[in-house]
Length: 159
Image (cartoon, rainbow, N blue to C red; front, top):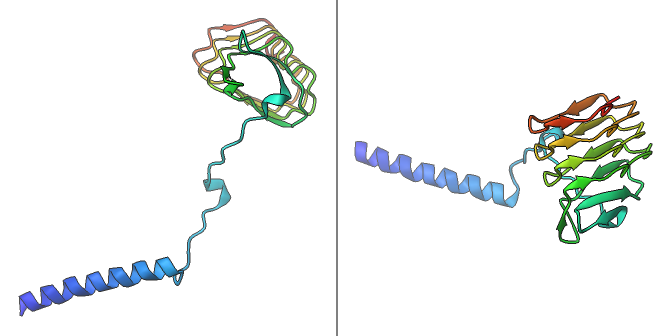
């Protein structure tokens, strides 16, 4: 009797699993939706045409776009972006956030000077130097994350 009961249990579990899988596949069972806060969004890089870029040095020389949220690409036309140049984003008063890629090692003089709507910035681990007045007059800046790899912060960088 024990052997018959074991076989019956195994067959009924297999049958139940098949019914469950079939029901899921044809949509008879409800699906669970995750709240949007639980889903990580990946921002697309800002188009290369929004930057004046010096390929020989890997430097963004000027931001010529108008977006409030900028995602600096790791590469422009196949060349790694390594530096945010002098005054590259200076006076971009509508800029609210900037994502800097891991390829960047230096943020130069006045790079974000006068970006009065910039509220937060995360500086990647690859950055080792923040130039003089880099974030000068960023009056809305309330959150800055500076990694341990930054070995030099020039005067008035966050004044």
